Length: 314
Ligand code: MN
Image (tube, rainbow, N blue to C red; front, side, top):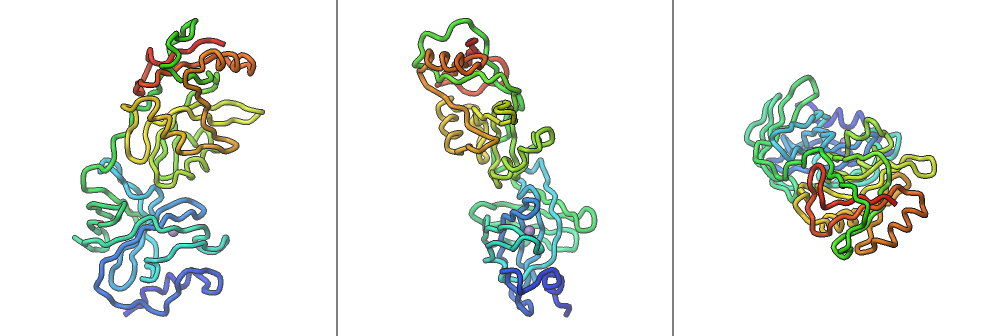
C-alpha cells in the first residue's frame, strides 16, 4: 500500500516544524474530525476527517458555510497524520504553512458517502454541527455545501440607518445617547470568514476583518480622516456571531459593540454619551466636527431615514 503520508512529509522539514512527523499511518476505524483555524499567509480553516488511518484535509478560506444558500471553496490538501487531531501551535515563518494554528473545533462525524469527488458527512462538534457535502469541482478545488437549515440569522439589508436633521437637540435628553457627527464617508462593514468586501476599496481593513476570525459581523461606521490617515470609526453593530441585532434597542447593540473592544490605530469605537446633549455639542464645536447625532436608547436599527436618530449641526 502506498505511503499515505509521503506528500505530508515531503512538504515539511522535521527539524524546523513543531508539527507531528510519524513514520507511517496506523489503520483505525474511527471517525474523528478537527477544524483548525490557521493564520498562515492567508487565513483559512483546515477541515480534517479521519479516513483510512489518516486525516483527509481541505483548506477552507472562509470556514464552514453557515447557510445552504452559500457554498464555500474547499481546497483539497495532502493527507495529514492522525496526530494532527491535537495539533495547535506556531509553525515557524518561512516554513510550509507558517503561522499560528489553533483548534477551532473537534469531534466525531458520521460518514454518509465517500468517493474521489464527493464526501458527505454529519459533523458532531461543539461549533461545527450538521450535514455537509464536499464535492470536487476542478482538480484540487472542491466546494463545501451545508445540507441542513441555516445555523445563523440572515444578514441585515446593506442599507444604513440615516438621521434626520433638526435645528434643536431633543428636549428629553435622558432618552438619547449623543455621539459626534463625523462628516466622514458612511460604511457598512460585513465580515465573513475573517474577510470583508469593504477591503476592496480600503485594503487597510484586511487585518481588521481578519481579527474577527470565524465570527460573522456587520458593523456600521464611517471612514474618517484623522491626522492625515483614514480610520474606521465604528458606532453600531447590526450582526454579531450569527445573530442579527437590528431588532435590539440601541443600548443592547452598543453594549455588544463595546464588548468587541475595537481599539487600534486604524479602527476605533466611536464614543457615546447617554443624556449629555449640551456637553457633546460643545465638544463637537471645539473639535470642528459638523454636529451631534442623538440616538434614541430604545430604538431598533432601521434601514433608511429614521426619526430615532437626530442630527443637529454643531
Ligand atoms: Mn492550513
